[in-house]
Length: 453
Figure 1 (cartoon, rainbow, N blue to C red):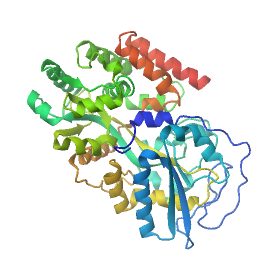
Figure 2 (figure 1 turned 135 degrees about the vertical axis):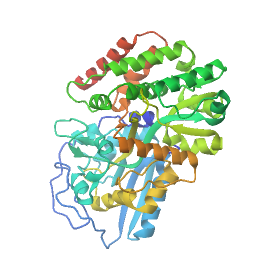
Figure 3 (figure 1 turned 45 degrees about the vertical axis):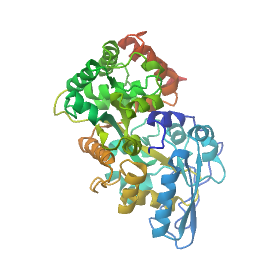
Figure 4 (figure 1 turned 90 degrees about the vertical axis):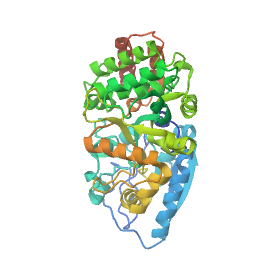
């Protein structure tokens, strides 16, 4: 999410541990105004209040180590405005949080708010709060629905539709960071208007003896680039249907095969370095920062750090479409937080989440402290940033929202698809050990095996 965060796909797949179902659901009970109730039955509060209580309340938040500073700052700012509400922030490393999240959600006295990007199992088991009553009370249904869809699930387990089970604190977008000085030396115009123009810029870098793309082929780089190409070649709804596990959806799509074919073409002509499979995320970013590569596919969570290291030498653009003037699409999703089904003070917690999205100062803090868009009502202006690169990424996010081009990440399709299937199959694709058609089918087979397992 921020410059301190792990790569986005790593963050999400780390939190893919299946939630443990409650052995016995708590009985629904009436509660005092402001408590929000602590019922796990159906996981939705029977009644909600949008007014803060007059008595003192402490809201406990479990977040990742990487997000702790930003969440703490937001809590302090909220308390400065509403002094009856204080916060206790607990942070754990992503891997530890992933291991313990089920225990945290189901303990007798859980935190009011927990960071949990991979939430489908928890929603199905009804151990996180159904936020529909708060969405209605606060008007969240008027926010960007493609982003909220990522946190929706219906009673059958279908993702992307149904009830809302999480709300983001910060909303990310992916694209291409580029070295402005190197682009100028190569005589290429940024941003490219089409995939062909991007291709030509890559070829110019290779011809000049430079890396075209700093590629983390060992982990997240290939899925990022693969999905950017699929977004350009195909229908975003088709891939979202697959990610959301819609019946009949498949990874074996013409656009995905075309994207995989382009990846192998780029390996063959040197656009993707031959050693990409041995390069991890940190190394690829170091190569880019050192000026050794023209492009790196990544997300806005790196904007603050890259700006601090590279200054005005770095820029950002959304990956272009296949045709000039096409609506731009990008992987864009929230850093989701859930309210455990048995948590106390749900109403106050929901008030805090709504405040983050609607209060002018809070929205500015999300941009400044986290480095990404605040989301929220689409009629509110996106805060500006003094950091030019952050300004470019937040504008890019707004462009995607306006075009309806927000797409979830393919590694979010199932808890195990990223590490268990996608990483080895992407490496095989880079090494030429599989064809694009075989690659797509292997991902689909792994997906079906997990869903049916």
